Image 1 (cartoon, chains in turn red, blue):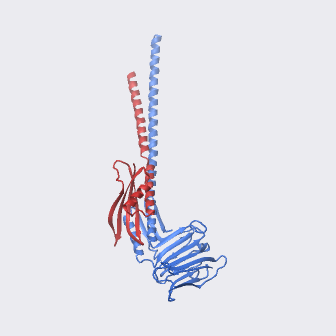
Image 2 (cartoon, rainbow over the protein chains, first blue to last red):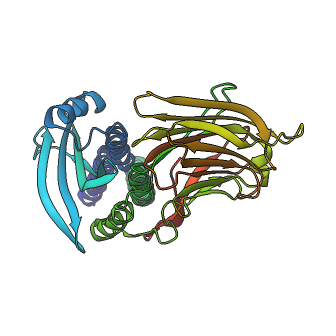
Image 3 (spheres, chains in turn purple, red):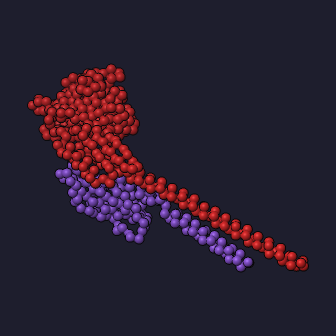
Length: 139
Length: 297
């Protein structure tokens, strides 16, 4: 009888420890996967894109965009910018080219991307229309 | 039964009850821990859903706002609107400056159409841009129903009644890109009453300032006044008209008579204002539906 009670008691204790471990693990995972943190990263990326667009840097040359990425994105973050350019001709959208700026996107980090579209206007004419995708990550 | 055996039986019963109580309390603690984990999971799920919805709303709203900015950028390629503080009083957003090349480029309408189509083609949202009411450039001066249009090779700015009351005056700067303005003079000049005055500065010159004519006056907002600009032979090459009957109190009309000019019109109001183009952008998504005019200044 005593052995039986002891076994039940030990099982209960083990169950309790497992439940506590599972709860701690769950809470720990939740803390790592903060949805508002992702939102904040997206907003940092979006602010950077808007800032570069307002200053007329997007659509500029390679060095200027790379320097601007370094200056606009916080130093603790890495950034990659991919710009796909198009023009409109006779009812159809024509792809021109893609250009990459900044660092290579790492495969082993959590990354956050936003999309920003912009028109390049010169002398009152829309030269092209581009889709920029800015990806940032913690370095 | 001896007293020793009785004590042993009592101790055994007591130990059994303790074991059951301990087991029950452990079970209850486990249940409470599970309930806590379940509540935290539910809370976390709600937080995640709220964050996801907020991110979707952020993306759609930003896409809409950015589409407005890009449309305004293309419009500014032809007519650039700037609303800034009054240089004299520093009151915010009361000084409107419109810089444009007239006549309006024949490519302008095509550029707007291209923008509308390419945006609709590439947008991840159901986005449409409608420039059908825009014509050669129709703008609304807000708040109120003031407007600026380009009928038949002219620029006509008509403030609404409230804006006209708060209009301080105009600075009109006409740059002749081809030819020279030989002379500029008042054809009619109407003086206004104490609550009907506005100051006007009009300047006509060529792009290198080889010739530069300036007129300054305080005139009526309601009664018609007009300035003639002639070339070296005396032929009329420009006409600037103020007040009725050109469109109402405080209105200004610049007729460039087929010439090639850059026109800079500054209007000084005492109430904050902003400018919208008569063109709409509509975005429809699950979390964000909106139609609005394109704000250009």
